[in-house]
Length: 272
Image 1 (cartoon, one colour):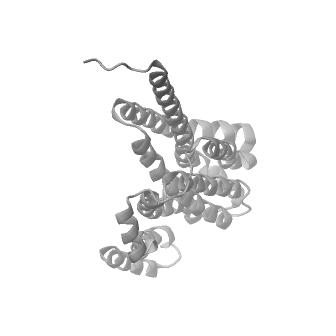
Image 2 (cartoon, helix red, strand yellow; image 1 turned 180 degrees about the vertical axis):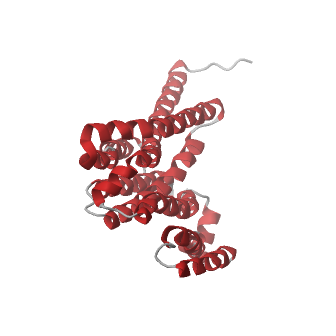
Image 3 (cartoon, helix red, strand yellow; image 1 turned 90 degrees about the vertical axis):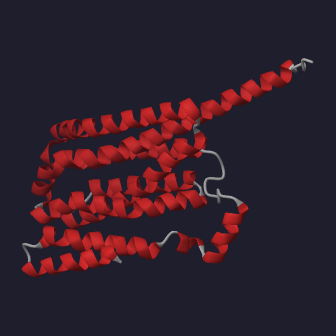
């Protein structure tokens, strides 16, 4: 016997489904804008390095740290940040990472010397390492089936486009700003993008932004074993020290041949 479908109820369901779909794609827009910003922030700097070296009278080692410092903190934070997103929810951590990246972009763009710039780059790597796994995790969380495939397709397009456009954009900004201001614009260009991302995220991300997202049994286990312990800060710290010890001799070996003694230390730390 055919069951009669209430047209009002069916209409409400269709309306709800449409609204949820629109919310998903708005969330994806915010994610892609922030990921575009962080990826352009990597490739755009390569073009600016000669201008940075001349403007700040930086050594070759200082210039190498501009790239390696970012990669170091990005890689160390990445795994723990992904785990933190699984435990505490991804939206809030994504916006925190975007805020760190944006503020450190301001610091890098206003850097008076190479040391200041490298500290800002370390913080940029921290922000990018915090937001990147949340972006991918949120695509997995909010999209299913064919829509997930489309969402990841858009993500792949943004990754390819951002890596390709970074050097072109960097060259254009240096040409417009000149040797003294142009390299600063390669960092400051992130600021309006970051602010837009934060505002749209606050408007469109589901609430609460930070909240436990697992099941009650896992929450009880985490409370007993400590959420902090589950993030393995000791392991992340050892990984960071290992990578730093391996990188440091290649960066600073000109200052002293003894720097190469750090290489076996780094290998031991990595084994631990």
